[in-house]
Image (tube, rainbow, N blue to C red; front, side, top):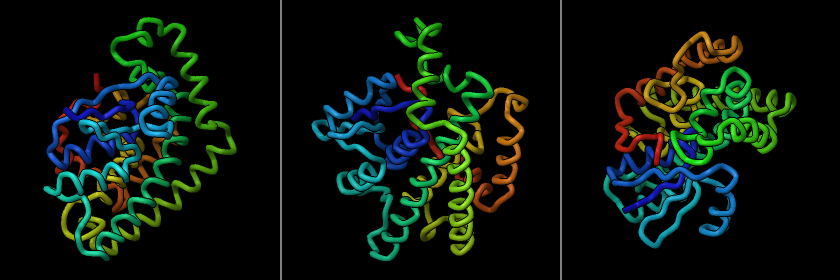
Amino acid sequence: MRTLYQFPLSHFCEKARWLLDHKELDFVAQNVVPGVHRAFAQLKTGQNKLPILRDQDKWVADTTEIALYLDERYPEHRLLRNEAQLRKEALDVNTLANDLGLHVRRWGLAHALSDNDQSLQIMLGEKGYLRKFEKYTKPLMKTLMSKGYELNAEKIEHSKAEMQRLIEVLNEKLIANHGRYFVGDRLGLADIAVCSMLAPVLEIKGTPWEKDHEESLSEEFSTYKTYLTNLPLGQYVLRVYQTERNARVDWRGV
């Protein structure tokens, strides 16, 4: 059985889950304790980030490397086209999306941790030591995340500006391809990458970022969500999630 080591709330892990689902491959989403994950990842892959895919005796880190591995090992339902130009275009969009994801993470976490503790509740999981001792682990996790992702005013403002720039670039690229998909005429790596990275901003139903109460949003976040929703890019993300995100595994993991 394949295992995806993940954080439920990570949009990069959402991207990896979607890659596996697109391939119609069975897998287990295995949650890893934040902080502890660094030693685990370093031991298995020589780097310290999630997601990590284990496929029998093969360990693959980084969502782009996972996509390349899956296409090589399981050629059905390809994520990248064989044609050189289409392949390059998809990888270029994927790179832009990954850059966007870094800024969405910082900006989104800053709002999530300041507005309410729903995000922290997801990170704690439904059982285990983090949940059992949440009185202590919740504030510790909040502190560690604020420090680890540099959630200070200057960095957050920089990320918002970069997020805006990249969204404008991707919106133009989508329009240039007639708004249906980023590359060619069917879903692929580029689409999965962009949609996954923007899901936290759009708080799409059925994802870890779905909000229980609209009023819990900050005014700034709510305004930006509305702005993105009204763009062709936002409408595209909502459409693709509704029509093509056929999740086979619960994002909450085990």
